[in-house]
Image (cartoon, rainbow, N blue to C red; front, side):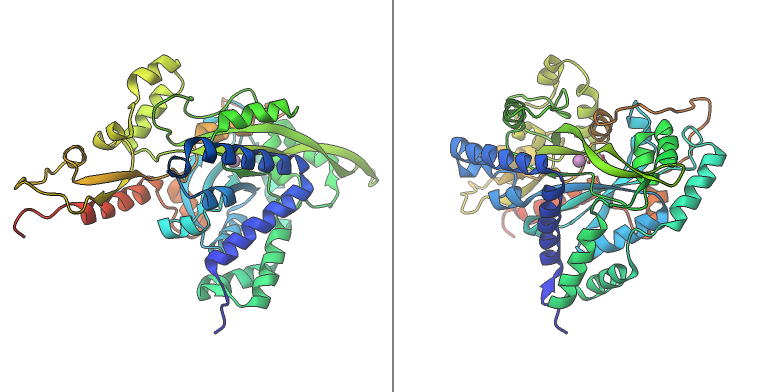
Length: 447
Ligand code: OOG
Ligand code: NI
C-alpha cells in the first residue's frame, strides 16, 4: 500500500498550511512570526548554538507552533480527536478553566500533541482544545442549556469525507499522495473563519453569559483562535512588539524572568483584533459588524517539572519575585538532584572507576561524574496562564451564578467523551526520565 506521506509529514504539512492560512487571515500573526524569528536569530548569535539549542534544535523551535480551537459537544471533540490522531497527536492533560479564570470561561480542555521524544523532535505541533460545559448551571440555566444543545446538534464541523480520510490515515500510518493532499485541504478548511452570517440575537444572548460560549456556540463552525510561535527570549520579543506599536496584554504569564533555570512555560499575547463579520438581524436582513475573538500569542518553553516541582511552582508563582529567588532551585543540578525537574540521563563513558561503587541517588551520580543530565522540555500548558490568556482577550467578563453548584468534569469524563485515553503529562515525562536513567546507571563493579 502506498502510504507515501507518513503521519509525521502530514503533521508537519498541516502545521505549515495552518500557519499560512492564519497569516492570511490575521496579518498581525505574520508580524509576530517575523519578530520571533529575529529574536531567535539574536539569541543564537549571542548565546551560541549549544546553549540556545539546549531546549530543542533551532529547526524544531522555528517550526514549532501551538494552535487553539474550541468545540461545543463531546461528539465534536471526538471527531476533532480523530483528525488529530491522523496527525499523530494524542490528548494529554486535563485543564479546568472554569475554576482557573475570574471571568466566565465555561470550558474544560486538553491538548493534542505527539507523545514520544522522537515524534516531538520531528514536529511538535500541538492544539489546545476546549469543549463547552453546558451542563454547568452556574453559566447556563436549563432553558439556555436545552437551546444551546439543540443548536450544536444541528451543525457539522467536520465533513464526513475528512473524517473518513482521517480514520484511514490513523489505521495506515499515513496517506498516499492524492489522499494526503485532499485530507490536508479539508482539514485546514475546517479551521478557517467561516463567512456564514452570525445570528445577532443568539450570539448576543450567549455573550451575556460568556464571550467564550458565544465564540463556540454562537456560530455554525469552529476556527483556530490563535496560533503561537515559540521564541527563545520572550522579554525581548515583548519589547520589540510594543516598539512596533502592537498593544500587548500587560504581562508575561508563568514563571518570572530570572537568572536561574528556565522552567515550564512563559506566554504573552497581543489583544484580539476586531475582524469584520456578517450578521443576520431578527428581520432576516444581513448587516456588517465585527467580532474580537482571535488574537496572537507567543511562548517560551523551559524544563518540565515533577509533581513536587510543580507544587513548588504553584506556591511561588503568585508571590513576590524575592520569594521565588529565595526558594526556587537556582541551578539545573539542584532541580535534578532534588527530584523537582525532569531530565534524561546519559552515562559518562571511559571514566576511571577507582574501584568506587556508584551511588544509588541521582544527586550522587551527578556529583560523582557518573552521568550527565539533559533537561526534558515542558510540552504542555498551564491552566492559570491559559485562563489569563483567555481572560485578557475578553471584552466582557460575562456572568456566573455562584449560588448554583457546578457540574463535575474531570480527566475520566474527558477520556470517555473523546473515546481515547487522555494521558497524564507527569507520567509521560517520568517514564522518559526513568528509561534514560536505567540505561545510564553504571552496573556495579565486577559485573
Ligand atoms: C485557549 C487558551 C489557552 C494557552 O496557550 O494557554 C492556550 C483558547 O483561548 O481557546 O492556548
Ligand atoms: Ni495558546
